[in-house]
Length: 325
Image 1 (tube, rainbow, N blue to C red):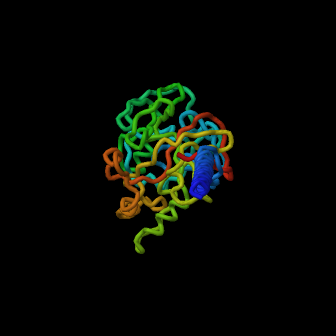
Image 2: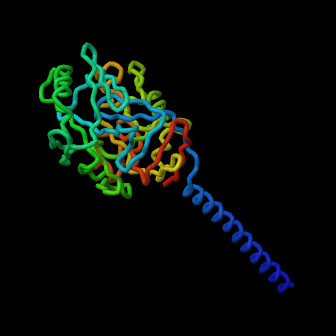
């Protein structure tokens, strides 16, 4: 009789062990399948707007398509942030109106004749040196007419407009590594942009922010954040978790979150500073943590800065695919 019980116990133990191993195998497979799925491109959003900013700090122009280049975006002869000013920081710039007309950029201001800028393709005037976040850069002087236009509009002399020519040097972009630090990276070059070639803003993230603003604060628009790509049909802040992005045949690397400054408080319709919002609310729930606190300081994080892996075209209405971190 003892030998029979012993045999039953051994069989029970063997069966239990096999069952545990089988269940463990199923669990491991499920985890592996979920992990593999996160490492593959999947649809996460839709492109609802494309915007290009030919002149840094000035309003953007909505377009139905953008050409993606090594340094950002282009629409015909017009490149993103290809023109900058040596004098910046005036909120009145938000009230200017820009439009494309053949190969010219028309800039309209209240009570001033329209400034018509021809896009330069070569060095045909004085080369002026400037600095973008401490990096030495060059640009070709856009002429006295442009200088006088901005001097009159801003009531400030010495505002010279310069254009970057493709032959001129570029800057190394920025990339966040290991959730610990931000370093320079020559694989993703930029010209007059602050940190990266393109910025993605998620409309759901804007909606989430608006739901948290004080009741007496003006609602925020995506325009406060100056994206190149506005996406929809996506959960709020899902963009934080992307590693790679694909739109049509163009792939992008998620380089870093976008650290926001006081510029977000300027009303894009009036050029008037809206007190401390939305910056104050963003600081209540969108601050860097752990090792990145020192890197970003008091700047909240909102939006995804991405760099192109290859060149191509993207269109409004395109699907946005992503690989998660």
